Length: 216
Ligand SMILES: O=C(CO)[C@H](O)[C@H](O)COP(=O)(O)O
Image: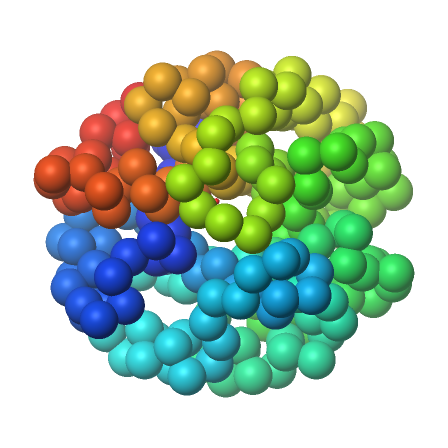
């Protein structure tokens, strides 16, 4: 399948949020990635419902929400009402992961599970067939602009093997330190969806950068 690109607005200038949404709209991006942080699960706060509501009004791309929060179940219904298409929760934040995944799907959205860099893919063995997406964090979640963790490529190879062995259909998404060089290697390792924040929005030509990532 073709690689999907999901630009993250985490590192944009929020004074000019509309400008960043327009960039994504005019590009070949597939989804718009929303990094929601609660200051508890990760040591940072980002944005919540008011910003998502605002983005929803003008984005032409499906919204892909990555919840770096504890107790994500509390937010599922409101995200659906705002028109979010995909919700990804963290394995490490969900003691009843199966229940959370079913709740997202029951609400009519696609369900993803994200793994922090230290969390082994083998822990997904019993739930992989229920998932629409697995998000491999290639940095420790909480901040944009961090360096890519090299172990992410072999980790994706292991996940690809698990998905194939279990005849599952989950997409493999990767987030953190994605650029042309790491992006190429991630795709070669088996990734389907690349999230890129600072690489896109610090580029001279963000639209061209998104379109080039899409062609990797
Ligand atoms: O989830 C995130 C941080 O927790 C960001 O989406 C991710 O870090 C993207 O940032 P960048 O492309 O700048 O590395």
